[in-house]
Amino acid sequence: MSCAKTERSLDELVIVYSGNIGGKIEPCGCNPPLGGMPRRATVIKALRNQYKDILVLDSGGLLYDSNLILPPHDFTTRTWAGATIRAMSTMGTDAINVSAFDLAQGLESLQTQSAGLEFPWRSANLTRRDTGELVFPADTTIVRVSLRIGIFGVMADNYRGTPLFKDSNPLAVADPFEAAAREVKKLKNDCDIIIALAYMSEKEVEKLATSVDGITLILHSHNGMHYPTSETTTFQPYIKGNSLVVHTPDGGRLLGVLELAAVDGSFTFKERKTGLPFEQKTEENRKLLMAQGSTYLNSFFSLGAEIVSDSVAQAFLDEVEPIITAYTDSFVTARE
Image 1 (cartoon, rainbow, N blue to C red):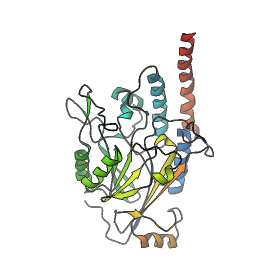
Image 2: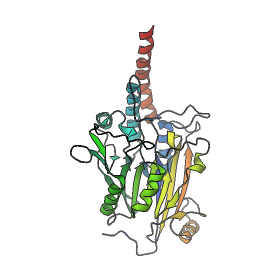
Image 3: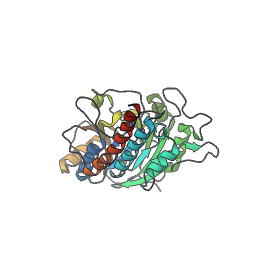
Image 4: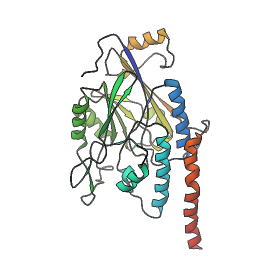
């Protein structure tokens, strides 16, 4: 059944997004310190109150900042990863793409950390090498406002050109472009909007946008760019092919907010030039939005010290900090 609109309409969707957080559960060591899961949780709660019905997505690279973690750092990073997953689970995240970096300590570790939380990992092309079976659900369909939204995850099998999943690995990565094409074919008849969560280079993302027709929005990380002082201008969305491509700044210092206004059932978006945010529900604002056609408006929340830490998310940090301190102290004692 098609979800296309036949009457004059305005559908408004707010997507809160992130990617490539890399296990940075606490604020960065930069000046000023930015980021951290407790501040992120506070902002997401505020956005839920402001917009009522948001979509929360992560494009991958959530848990670790490397795809290879060796002793003695494995225990520390694994402990922080568990706290990260529990904190994210309290924020009502709708879908998280699996990346090679999330698998840095193996599939079993990832599954153990997520056990009992119904954590929404998604991947349409991570498979078991011996059977070809998908490891995680490929996609999910979510209803927000009056829209049906299909979301799937894909990743590339490389890091800056170097393959990550060797033949000895029990996991394999199928072709992401073929996987994306299958997902679009599966989702297109029942969904208004199709979102791809992609962990791959910008060049690969642009190939995805131009070679797989039908993806409304591509949210991607792992682009190899690091611009802490200019992220709000560098990581702005752009149109490629028929898709809206949305970058996610790394490190979790910023939280992206994308407002989509779909007019008359059209889900081909252009940048919004005028008009007020959705929460100002005046008739004048509605007319301004309608006059522009289907548009997007992107903004970033900087997670600075002015944001009060969410107590629930902070509790996860407080719980693991003494464990990590004791582990670190044990090495100091052993050397003495």
